[in-house]
Image (cartoon, rainbow, N blue to C red; front, top):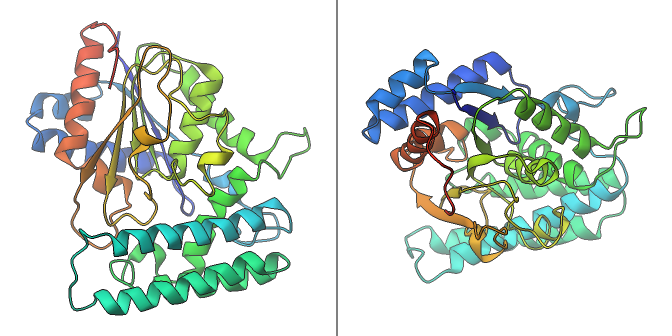
Length: 336
């Protein structure tokens, strides 16, 4: 039976499902060839290695009164979460910058002062009253952070408003609010998209998630407990202790029961993947499976891209092995 490969995207603006599927599989094929799995790359491109699907939920973040994804949160828990997210993000960036292993290059002192300014602005966002006040402070933080390499020239966040829009999506998901006519919250509607995509698969499944999608996938897999041969998280904010980790469902955070192996990858320059070693913060499931984290180093300015991660030989090679093993009828793994 042909295994299933499900991609779950993260933060960002509108996407086209078919184009994204082609982009993600193409990047993965590049990484497979780099890792020595040329046959798997060819089979992936031809559709013989796996039944591939891309789950899109970004349209659920659009607001009727706003264009695009609607960056402005309404008054309510999402505004407070966004403010906390900004503080946590700057604190983690500061801790990384102050780490003894961080090179004290010519720009080190300048970045330290910049982060100090961003921290003060983030703290003021946490003290602001009302959604619009929080957003004004958030734009100040984003403007300051985007003056620091490697994000200043990143096409993904060309202007501060785009950065705030994307971070607001994390806050809105974790707020568990924005109920529709049926009373279903935004986060539940997002997970339903992933659950529906999982239901389409018939064989063993590999789930590859990115950014906010790692949170969505983690919670969906806990709800469904399907047979997942490999769960891959890329650029994940799951372990952000002040904002994300304490709001995950269920608590305490753990590996979903149906996951046979969990690989987590992070890039040191990824602004979203703070506290990247997930195994320190998530409990194993009953089979003893816990996340296993590995660092990669990508080139370019915007390393948070899913394509950058998928094209890495270290990432793609393990996915190729899992799909090849599953397609040959191999038993599921018992660990990471």
